[in-house]
Image (cartoon, rainbow, N blue to C red; front, side, top):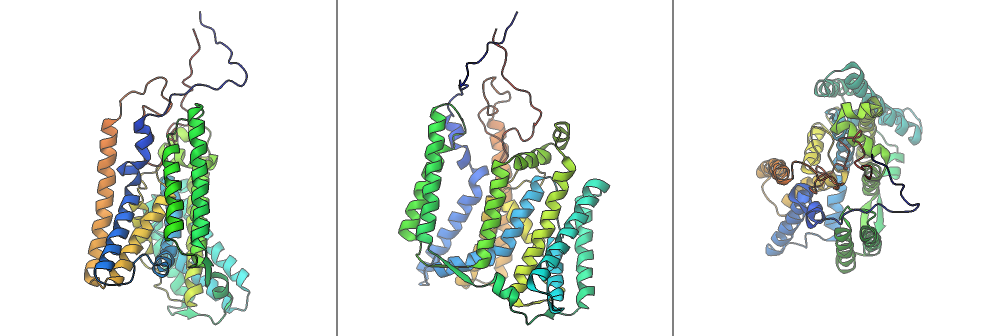
Length: 435
């Protein structure tokens, strides 16, 4: 006969201390490879600029330029990562961005205010995303076919709207709202951010010692916080002339990361993308978590189109053609799975930064334009190959069966950038009755 012994009030369940392998997991190639690649590219261009007598590559002016050039693809890469995590993808974001821009300028030219024009553009993008989501999830058409068709159809709508001609505006409202420079004291603010990260790392270490968590992230959070504070105080400028669009980009990335990392919405999204049937059986509204990413894709694609026309005050029917492929490349560079259930928006941001750092570096060093696309293609294929090989090696090295007391699935950690348990929302509690 077995009985369940009551646990004393306030008692904390003992958990094993994280192993060295668990602590090293965030630094493994298949998890942090894109960060290593970005650091290597920056070092290479910096050394090349020094050796050829050019200005310092990581100067405040040039780094601000790289961030500004990354804004449009970076925003879409963040939202595309959410869509990929859900198990789908969207090829129509470039056309939707152009249509949102065209609608915004058209409404603005009718005499309506900037707010009305912006809402019209955003509403158009959201409607296109909702159409994609309904066709894919409720009707059951393949996402590739649907978004390929809407990409062509939306571009046709833009041709009809503009009569095949470029449209422009003399209204300054969009430019005033979305362009211009807002200087940042990077030395102070980034040092504060590093100090906050350091404090969170210390807190995590204390919780690990008490047995409350077994993540193993405390040491690397402390290390990263120290490095960020040191770099900020030693190298970053007191006046970093970032544009308004860079702040929008950073805000979108941070909010998306926080939602995916710390909320039930994020955990459910990973669960839906990793194992749709298990998520459905656990009571998750799968349709909502499949359709909403498409709506977000359309909404933020329209926002990117508005940011585009706020700079140039004009749009032509062929604008932003091919943007969707660059966005997908950035997400793939960040290690996002094309099969759903795994991805990290911050790494997709780093993937976008890699692409535009390469473009910027080629320009600064006066490298031939004929070789740029070849080099970018090799980088993308190489990154994807490294991720696949590293993940296969990791899977072979993990034990086949988890130990009964191991809360982290055998010590190997979850799949890349996938919260533990996301694939199995219905997994039973492993605690057994005490004999």
